[in-house]
Image (cartoon, rainbow, N blue to C red):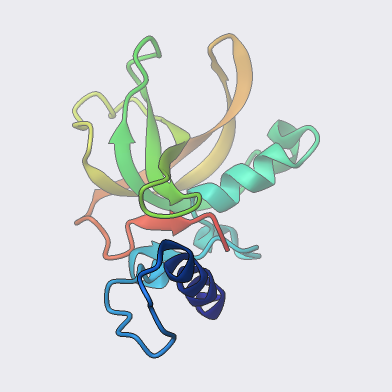
Length: 163
């Protein structure tokens, strides 16, 4: 896939008249794999990231009953949606849609009595189960954690939503 990116960059340089050749030094190119973990299909629920869970949940009819009780282990940072319950926060990862400049936050809700002390932006590893919960007057799946562990920002903080 990186060869395809190089092809497009070579084409763009020809159009812009920068005379870039395939043999040119490519140190300035973005290497998605250095910054982002992949988001292909993952059979093991404990290895799925936020994007993989969101894709799976949104593509499943009656996802609340299908996935309730599924084990989850996800990594992300704390983000609070203003207007939600104090015991609810989103565990968010930045997802690359096109390039690093086109990154969007994507999260999965976490519901726990002990979340009020968690500061926004704190990176966590959350392990627990998916469970139904009323969120904004609608039954939704949330993570009911068994453990919430603060971690350092991961080397691959982004999720590659492109490939």
